[in-house]
Amino acid sequence: MITIDRRKFLAGTAGLAFVSAFPLNAFSETNASLKIAISAETGDLDLLQNVSTLSAYTIVFDALIHYGQNGKLEPGLATKWTVAEDQLSIAFDLREGVTFSDGTPFDAPSAESTSNAGWARATSPESASPMRSTAS
Image (cartoon, rainbow, N blue to C red; front, side):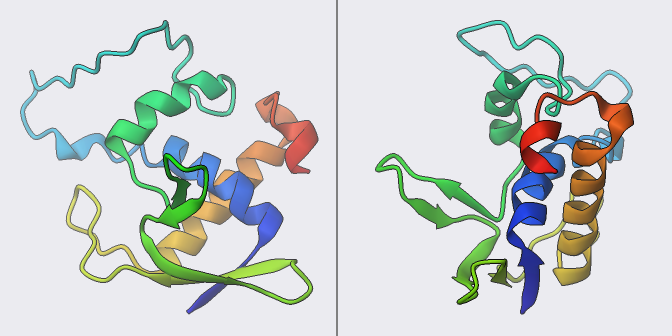
């Protein structure tokens, strides 16, 4: 079980979608392409700069948890989660048998690393992210 600070989780899930875009070695063919139909222009594909990009990322990448059609949180890569009594951290049980596109296993250290990277980027003065004011 991994425990992540709530603020780090929120920024990390946003960062997860962004950072996950980097291991593009999943496309072994040089002319491979992915086409996604979206009803509106996505703009910049940097999730921290353009929140509307989230719709494109959710088609390709999974999150620890997500909102279902009823507006309630549902499992994603986390099978269950527990919010600490002080509500400053969340413990996640991760789904087993999940791998990244390059075959690397998805586990607690990779979830933590990705969340921390997303948090660091979202709160960095260099990112100029519109999320920075709410994530710091």
